[in-house]
Amino acid sequence: MQDVPINLMGYTLRVTEPPTVKTRQLENGELEPVTNRDGVLQFVVVCFAKPKAVEGQRQGKGAEIRVNLGADPGDGFTEGMVVELVNPLLNTYEIPDRDNPRLTASSGLWFKADGLKPAAASTTSSAAYAASGYSGDES
Image (cartoon, rainbow, N blue to C red; front, side, top):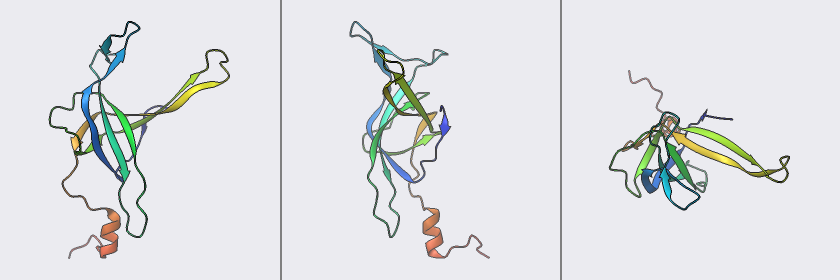
């Protein structure tokens, strides 16, 4: 499956490695910048994704994720900053074993997004509104 839209509103994303140009290592050991098929330079950011706390439930553990960015997110994204992904997508991959193509040597998930932006200063979940008795009608 490729480019599956995902909703990360239930997670806090904290930058653990600020955005940098994505690179790949060549056979001679040199690093080369990665571009997409149109020749546009690609970027990568590493974030710690942790489920947001839900009242009455134990908070879940988080995981570090590496996100490919299709454009330069700009300056100002520092370690520890809480961010949101613009149009986040999930992809899967599977690499067959060289000796026996019927076996899988490696498989997994990877994330990508169109961009990165600072998280809203304060967000209130729909669960918090429901718990407060807010009905959406203030008349």
